[in-house]
Image (cartoon, rainbow, N blue to C red; front, top):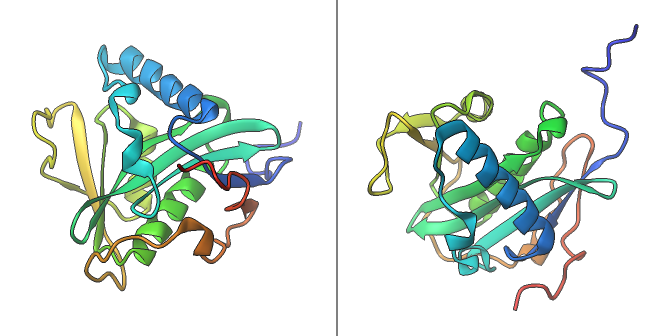
Length: 197
């Protein structure tokens, strides 16, 4: 028997910017919603999140693909001066442990860096141990809740200081970004050109 746990997946990961209402983005955020409902008994409805949060140049929403299959998603938006917020990070169960979540997170952090954000904040559930481990490995630390009405026994607010961060001056167009270099990851900033209207 051979060990396949550390073998790279057969298809490279492609990170593709899409509109938040893109059908694959909707499918993935609904899967996240259903998983959260199962884990906690309640969750924030992803359809209540304004798509404008992720419109360039002050936002970005990504889907991650391996071959023809969408395996994950995540978004980032300007929250306040110097701070960007990551939202709707999700990787399908079959693709967890393959580096997809880390690649999405890195691309979102790189975007915040280009925006000159000093920090990135996010929320995740206290019972989402895989996500908490990913964020801890990436350098996130627990902070007080930054959203009103959150129960710190259920929700975890996390933050990461960014190197070379500066004052928020607005985002730069996603298509002008340099490519992200990550093993087994390809980026595509033109695949959905024109989807942001």
